[in-house]
Length: 402
Image 1: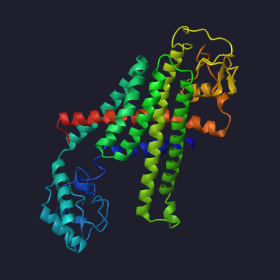
Image 2 (image 1 turned 180 degrees about the vertical axis):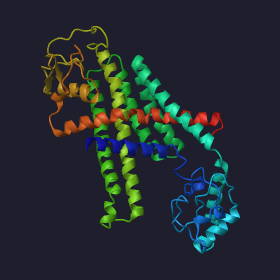
Image 3 (image 1 turned 180 degrees about the horizontal axis):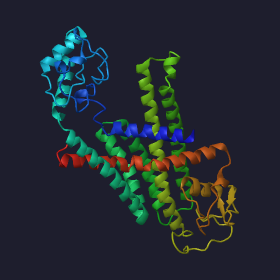
Image 4 (image 1 turned 90 degrees about the vertical axis):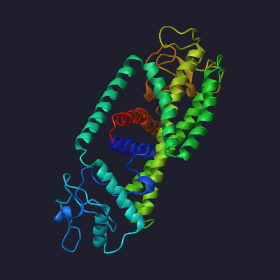
C-alpha cells in the first residue's frame, strides 16, 4: 500500500512537469486538440476499402487500427504507411459522408493540420528509431554521469541540485505561461532569501538556528498538508466519486483532477526545495557556531550543558532538552531541526550515530518521515529529468530530427 501511494505521487508530479514543459501532446497549435494519429499513418480514405462499409460508415476492427467513434471528423482510418496520403478535399468529402453533415470551418482546419502532420512524418520510421536511440542513450548516459558526479564530488553535486531545483521548474513554468506558479515561487524566494541571509551571517546570532529551523518546519508542514489534500482530491477524481454521487459531470471531474494534481505538485516541489535549502544551511550554521566540523575536530570545545547547534546553555532555559546516546544535551527544537528537518543523522559535535526513532513520539512523526523520504526520491525527477529532456530536444534540433 505504501509503495503504491509513493508511485502514484511520483506519476502525478511527472504529469505536471510534462504539462508545464509544454509537451507536444498537450495541445495542438492554436489550442486545437487533434485526434492523435500514429506517425506511420498513410493512405486515408479509399485506400483501405475494409475501413468503411458501402454507405461510408466506419467499421471498427483490428484491421483498420481503430476508427474515431466520436461525432467528430477524423483522419485516422488505419491506412498503410507505404501508400499515398489523400488530398484534403478527399478527406473532407469522406468525413462529411461519414458524419452525414457538412463540416464546420474549425473542423476543416483541424483536419488540415492533422493531414499536414501525417505528410511531414510519412516514411520517417528510420528517423523515429534514431530519435528513440538518442533518447534512450541520453537517459542511460545521464544517469551514469549523475551517479558518478554524486559519488566523487558530492558537495558540488548537492549545490548544483539545489540551484537546479530552485531555478529549473520556475523557468519551465514561465516558459509555459504558468504565472500562478511563478508568483508563488517569487513570494517563497523573497522570504527564503531573508532566511538564507540570516544563516550566512558571521558572526551568527544564537537565535538564528531556531529561526531557520522554524521557517523550514513551517514550509514543510504547509507543503505536507497541500500534498495530502492534493493526493486525496486526485484519488477522488480517479475513482469518479463526484460523478457517482452526481456532484458533477465528467468534465467537472477533469477540473477536480487538475486541481488535485496542482496542489500535489506544489506540496512536493516546495517541500523538496525547503529540504534542500535547510540541508545546506544546517552545515553552514553549525560550522559558523564552531562546534561542528565536516572532517577532523571542531574549532571549539563543547562545555557541559551547552547546545552545540545554537551555542546557548541547556541548563538555564525553560525549553525542553534532549540527550543523545553520546550524552550530549541539546535543545529539543534544535536537535529535531538538525535531524528531522536538516536530514542529519549524527551528533553535531562528536558525529556519533543518532537514533532517529527516538524522535518519533506519535504517528504524525512516522508519517512525516515517510513523506520526507518521498521528497528526497523526487529530487531527480524535479531537477535532472527536465534537464535531460531539454538536452535531448537540443540534440534533435541539431541533427534536424522532428
